[in-house]
Length: 317
Image (cartoon, rainbow, N blue to C red; front, side):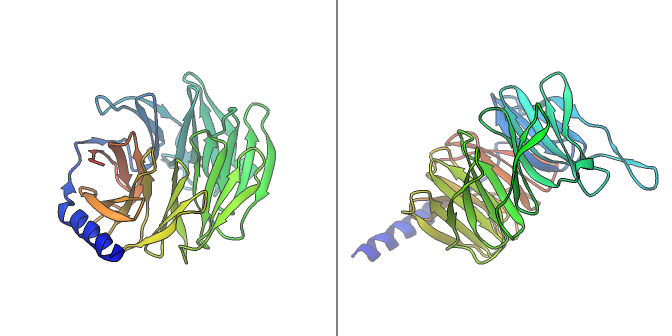
């Protein structure tokens, strides 16, 4: 009887699912790598050597943080790609490409731009975040997690957490926990202050996890194995959704009730109910592989692919 009831629910949901178009679009300065929202402004990392600052109420660029271009071996100059961006207490943190194979990490306080990690230190941070006390934590491609005192410029710890290449990385809302994934298909939850691994989830993926999302005790993952993994921190939820193509990106609503993932070769976004994995509406309009999906609240979200267009959406939960 229960199976029949569940089948009817899934059938009803599928019949009433619809395709949604973006309510607005904005052209960024270059290809979008990452973005973060803070007090109604969207800070967008691009490959044009700048962080675009967009007013969400008007969907217009109101300011930019720029860094100098890089000199090539031929003597030409090219923009430095910004790979990740974060905001905390009026400061912007971002990671950029260097002239060597290594990367630079910057902090902008609203007036002054300061480089806190130089490529000469030979570190390869993939992403960087502010902690809840204003320090900086970043994860490297080699799966090292480094806590950095950006005022005194030294490492508080440098912990190697996996033998596999790091995939996704995100902090909890209170910035005390970190969720990271790697190419083995495992997801780890760490304490930011100590780098201690508190939990490991590895039951739902068999290959590399590109991205992770975390909200309200729930984790979802985007896998090269064409799966979307769903885990709860208390261990009560663990399942995966099969997709028909590589899943490049995922997102979660603040409540954790609504999930979203990149779906198919046409770069659609698929919404689903995280309680049971039921698919609901699709978001249609992207023309490149997805890089980032972020909920602003339960009904509004922003997304971008490997393109210079940022998409704004409104959904019905």
